[in-house]
Length: 162
Image 1 (spheres, helix red, strand yellow):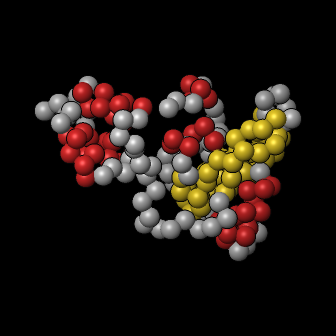
Image 2 (cartoon, helix red, strand yellow):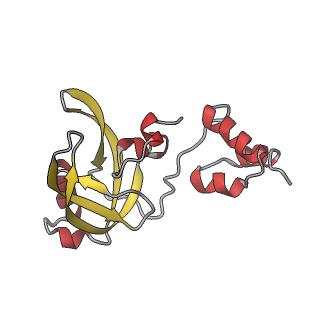
Image 3 (cartoon, rainbow, N blue to C red):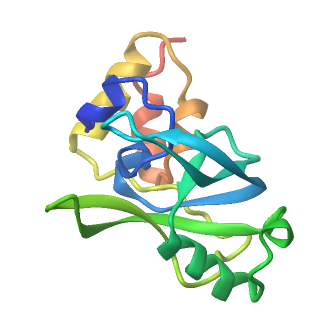
């Protein structure tokens, strides 16, 4: 399913960026204090995380900084470089409303764990995958993004254009 926010060019990582709403594992490249403009245009100096993975940078609020301090057992942001964290979406009260916000999970990600989301056979994502293959694309691209069963792979192979 496509989140409406993915149709606009936002500069920062947001809950809408998570694939099918699933957690992602990110490796911190560096933390920087940067001037960030809010929705009202007001500029503030905020902490921003940059990652080794091909994702947008993430504005790191106090809640997430506290989670990172506990996770990495240090308040020193320079020591966070090279460390991995798991990020997911949570519903929070903010700006007078309930919104989806990125939250650093309070545990270290399991290295080597397959965190790709699964596809339910017959779902909209499944049907989109079939259409993707019918238009001449490669099954390997789908397998890199999603965890598939052997049966699903066998079925999808039938739709590959040879």
